[in-house]
Length: 298
Length: 290
Figure 1 (spheres, chains in turn green, red):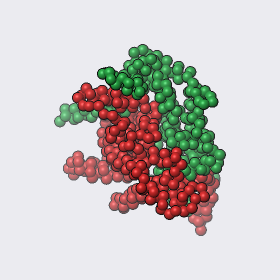
Figure 2 (cartoon, helix red, strand yellow):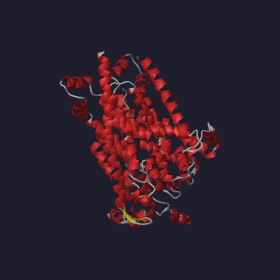
Figure 3 (cartoon, one colour):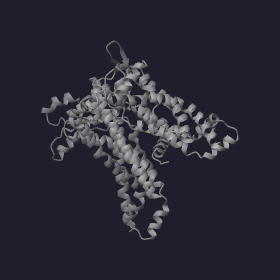
Figure 4 (cartoon, helix red, strand yellow):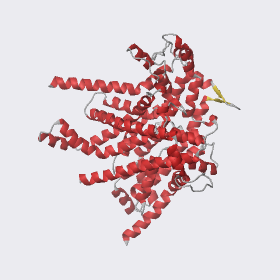
């Protein structure tokens, strides 16, 4: 009996580890390949058209390769040096990094402020129609981006936001997702804390600043990670609202870089996901907490 | 009287705190939402006149819409149960003491933060006509498959969806499992209940609220798979993975506002029906529990 359990545990652990390895494999693979030389990449992974020409030859298959022949930072150097040319100008790859940051950071900061205020209201204050209003927030949160494509475009046009980062930043700031997540955290705060502060003569603003905000700090951290994961990755919004490819965020431009200069694709990918991975490393605890609380029922 | 005063006080503060969110939310989400619905009954976005259900009739007669809608439906219908099943099994495995538990959990949630754009290269290498998967297939005596340009493309996209979403569901299930009181199992054991009985009568019953949420999120996330498909296969991918979002995006590009808004409204209707069914079942379930 004992031995049986041991074997069962062993098999279980082994299969879990195997699956875990599959989950992280794309990252490991991209990282190890980012240290190949450009030459090795183009020799080893011919682009689609080249490989089709080779079709006649046998053994023209693309082998997955994990260990570089020669360890080098060539791709990384090239990423920083290479410029992408547009009709009227040249632009360094770093500029796309900047584009991404200039859109994502204001969205995160803005939504933290707007959503935490709203979350306090929806989580702790009572007024008529509150729950109905919150339901409306939730329903729109569930809708895919494409659903409001046309009106959003017209409104952005009216506000003069088209082809500017504002067209992406403003809708991002007012997204309902932050309100939803932070409300879950606000609701875990006992009413007695707020009552006690009221008896001490604190107003709502003081309560918000001194009690609510410090207590939902894990929620704010979780929101930062989740928003970052979502907007650093965005594709649909810039595709619609930005005409000028030189304004594209890295998420959208990366596929272009990969197509044009395949030799530096892996390093570009790693540099692209690096901020995400760093945040993941530091705030994994909050990410887990945030996701788990989002599923908790009130 | 006092309660009423309290209510009014809260109301004023609430309005003040809520104002920024309410203005922005209305402008960028609520108003567009209402406008979109109205457009779907008109023959032009700006200054059009009402044409009743004409746009919907046109839409339902369009072959590419039907294809996109069918593809999206099947993608969701197959992958949502799949992702829930796999993540539930994983959560059950990880709910017991397992070696390297934290490392395993971290690995499963890593894909949540890994941008799909950054693994497109790997995808091409694996699933190209001359890619590594086909190499392995040949070695095992099967013939090559054109993964991205055949019926198999839906399998490839499903893999991305599963890869991305398993971890998210898994940790929500883990939290749900942790919330089931241990005594329930102990009592059941004392009464001589078997493993399967405990799973069905305790675990599944107490996990139901979590299940609702996971189900809803998985469906919503299955609509988001467009992002991945777009990055891997572009505007016009192989027929089998042409999703409703491709259709909407392409209608937008060709300025066909009527079909786009009608399609959007139909989609909203479907999501709303789903949400209300869930709420109804959940309410009934809560009554049953108490």
